[in-house]
Length: 158
Image 1 (cartoon, rainbow, N blue to C red):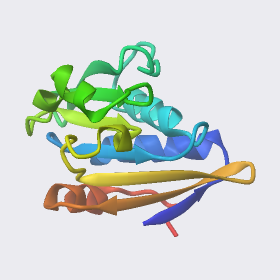
Image 2: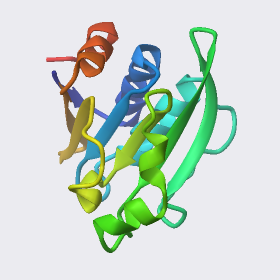
Image 3: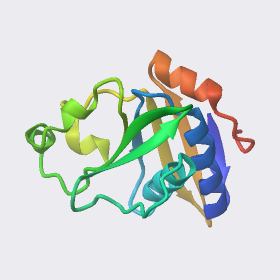
Image 4: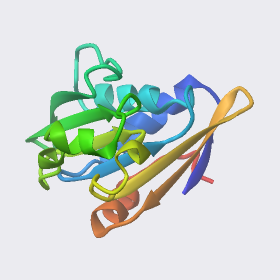
């Protein structure tokens, strides 16, 4: 699935649509250069999923957990930003792999920094700067990812 996000309001709309399509256990890898909108999309998704507080980029902490309720069920959404990791082993040393337990929803920025040790994604989201907006592509890599995309209702999908 591909779409063009004309501005930040379209990024927020995609975050809302993704929040409504989330399923427990989902692993989402976010790809894109600095400034492509990975954190903005995650922030919109978390707010749409019901998180009331601040959503900050976990650039220095590497991960930030958020408790939300989806379809009446309490779910942890863990947002990772691996940009500052020096090696994939740091991902293992931090114990992050244990978070991918089939219950938590894990959203990973810069997944290539943990290549070889990071569990594979159910859904890959690739963002790229395109003029004033962003181009986005969503790809499913598992039955859970396919189910998420089937639940996604985003009118700007091309």
